[in-house]
View 1 (cartoon, rainbow, N blue to C red):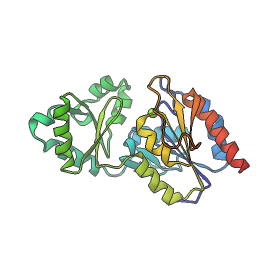
View 2: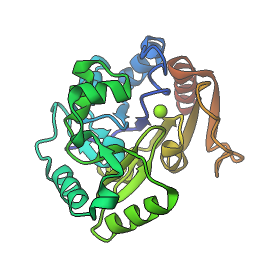
View 3: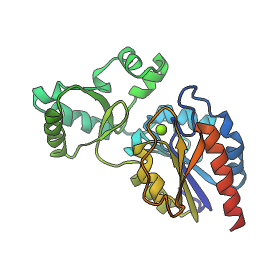
Length: 261
Ligand SMILES: [Mg+2]
């Protein structure tokens, strides 16, 4: 599916390319056009579902690039709006239903909830919640048991090949791949000369460390990330400005530096 490209950029969305509170990304327009002008690739990588990401991918004008969806549990190919196959999600749900009742009842997944309940839980609009429920790879949910019950729950899932990632709000169950696994595959496919990754949260760290240049985008709404592995050697930098404003400046500077090498 790929052409070779010089620069491939991987970016988280919420709190990184998109403002944490207003969902605005217009401050990043200058850097987005600069990337387009040099035919660099832009891969969106988020916990969002395919229908949620494809909408944004279109608005950002990067439909010709794949996107990493559901926190890396799946990949959305260029120019399509929905993953054609939800069998991984069905497997996760089937495993969940096979657990002993006392453990199963402590996890409330999106698949257990109505659109209105997901809207209430996430703060999304009704339409947004409907898109968030259209899952193909992974199941986010709320955990309500003790730490001990959680261990038993995770062990029972692991026996059947289901793993869990703890995010800010939800415990997300999937068959195991994460953002950096998908990033690795895409690098193998596109073979870019340079890679940049941008993110603001713990689930972006592996991606930030794997890229030639990782950019931690400031997010005043959360605890700053602890110092990362390659931060001392210049492999990782941090923006001072938050969200799309920080994203814009850091990407323009990085492009500038690449042009001079
Ligand atoms: Mg984020």
